[in-house]
Image (cartoon, rainbow, N blue to C red):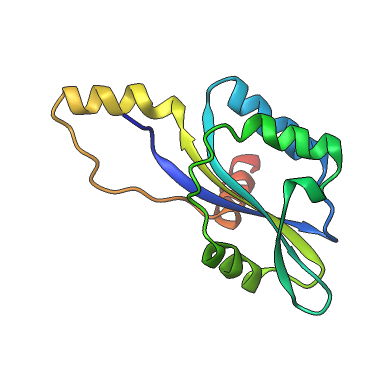
Length: 139
């Protein structure tokens, strides 16, 4: 049984992936909060050309970090997916496209099934709306 599965697109200005994001992601994987099912690094140059970055074209340390958290290699991300992400990227930016499984929710899912419960609806609050909630809490 799997936990809920989501995709996430993270955009980076100037095509610079930084270690802080990978460190936080690796920490979540190591704590078994999430599982990275697949990931792709996507690059859009100043002329609008989009390409997926190969791990062997990254710096050795960055490639090794990504290899360490990308354990399943299900091949869930297609060329069409990377092209779609590339369409929304700003020029000279890059993105990480991740497909993650929420491991923290597996026990909850099992309990719901055992209690004859069912998921009726789900969704995600956009970060802009979440920022509004933060403002309300501050007041």
